[in-house]
Image (cartoon, rainbow, N blue to C red):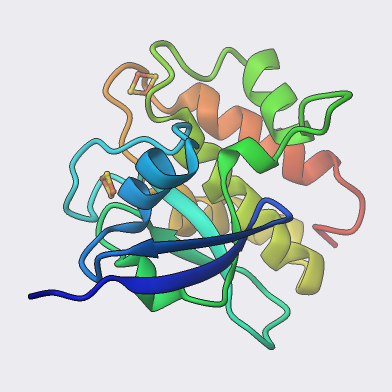
Length: 173
Ligand code: FES
Ligand code: FES
């Protein structure tokens, strides 16, 4: 018989304690145990990046990219997790969200949480290590280029991401 395991996480600045089967993915944990359904599952095999969330391991200062559809939640026990629900404040959308709206980046929006978390991780990285402006296009391609969108031509996503990074002080030098 497979034993359930106690899971303790901090999700979007709230402590969470639950029990779960070891094979439960982070995506299913968020949807079924926590009621956070903003993280989308599309391919379910770690390819399309729709399910991207950010996780910070105990003692680490930076977040890492996690594909929630393939990551067992037990592998993240003790981590600090940021999902798309944690981006906006009670007063306003995040700058990333505002930029996606301003540039009409998405249509159905199914891929949008993954793109939002992708750019959030990129901004987190740039806050610690700014990049030269002439290398920004390549960096966006490297970090966001694997996200799949079935509706748009990617150009408006790219424009929104480029704008938010270029316009935020301290990210490019
Ligand atoms: S749904 Fe996780 S990578 Fe596609
Ligand atoms: S906007 Fe529909 S999949 Fe990207």
